[in-house]
Amino acid sequence: MEPKTHAIWNARFFNMIVNSMADGVFTMDALGRISSWNPAMERISGYTAEEALGKTCGLLQCSRCFGQECPADIHKCQIVEQGVSEAKECRLRHKAGHDVEVIKNANVVRDEQGTIIGIVETVTDLTELSSARQKAKEAALRLAEIHRMDNIIGKSPAMRQVFQNVMAAASSEATILVHGESGTGKELVAGAIHFNSERKHAPLVTVNCSALSETLLESELFGHVKGAYTGAVRDRIGRFEEAEGGTVFLDEIGELSPFIQVKLLRVLQEREIERVGESRKRKIDIRIITATHQNLYTRVQEGSFREDLYYRLKVFPIRLPPLRERREDIPLLVNHFISSMNEKTGKMVRNLSRKAMRTLMDYHWPGNVRELENAIEHAFVLCNRQQIEFEDLPIEIRQPPGYGACEMPAHSAPTGLTGRKRLTRETLIDVLEECGWNKAEVGRRVGLSRTAIWKYMKKWDIPLQPEE
Image (cartoon, rainbow, N blue to C red; front, side, top):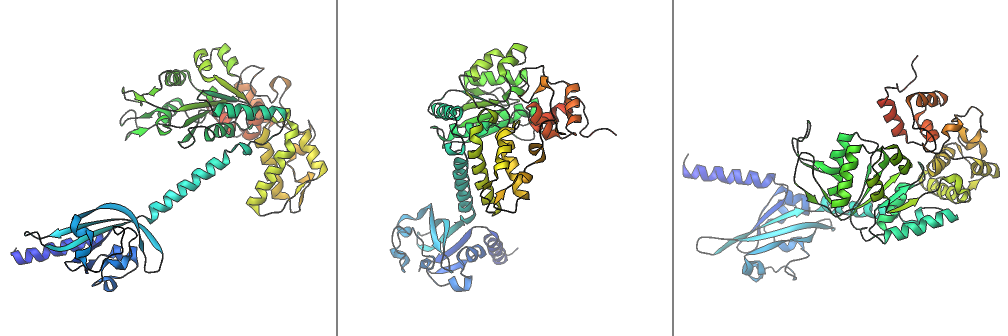
């Protein structure tokens, strides 16, 4: 290939590269006039190449042009003295009049004799990144808003004690064990502790220990290295590392296998972890909050939960009372859920009828606050007035005790699995049949989550629907 042809081909190839770049690139000649303007600059600035060529970079009205207005004479610009400008975040004025956040960089180009022949500038559009930053900031604010203390509703003596315990826990670094029946708001309490603590600016990471198998839970918590097991195609950090400087909330801690219990005990003692498939120890700075609906002390006595881990976890226990023990809070909770549902649905429901409120006050609430919230949401679906009536409530709440409702026998009353033998396959099948194979209802009756019920059914090879 002849030198001239080769030079032409190189120039075309270079132009193809510049024109295909996502970043804006433009050049200026020795007089400071724009001599090239790639398509990305057209998109970022709104000016076409035809509009920009021959103009100075003052066209862009950069917000950080060495602290001065951009001079028309390139030799008066400090970029000539410095030879290069550091990459800096700034704003450019779009042709349409709005500002565009960018990272801008510039370099002086000289010939072999050191004479300036031009300047090359690159512009990286930060619009999407800025949007992502704003969304992350808003999400963090919403998360903190969700976990404010005033989102834990109640004025009963039992709840006032909870508030005091939460604030005491937030001002310490002690390991917290939150225990209470399913639906009492254990995750809200964990969030309130974190977002009122010194760790509030670091992550709050939640892991449901009952939702994953032992192998998956180990990888989820501790992470793994590539090749640690089949399917581990790359390194992955675990939730403990992800929460560095913040808090890990381990829900349903009573479901941990003996193997994971040993590993968690080591984390609490040594404050270090090892990824699956790796022998390197990694120091971590986290706070651990755990929660359970089970009586862990009973599990310790049964030999299914380590005693040393139990005492490590319950340095500062917080008990959440079931709704039936704080019925005076029901009107407050109802008003809160009505306001929330009005905002979501655009309805203007004001209150409940006297009969509907009395029905809620008399109900035993095996699903606690979560069940009450679901009941109000159910009522909103049916209610087309300003007042929720008795007929708008779910049928299991409206029916008197024993009227076709799924009732557990006395030996398995809805107080969780404590106070009786552990759930057996035969008992679970009986309850499923009584509840018409409604897993959510079964969970409420035996004090377990619906996920836990599915887990037991899979473990004991119970079909999801009754066999014909």
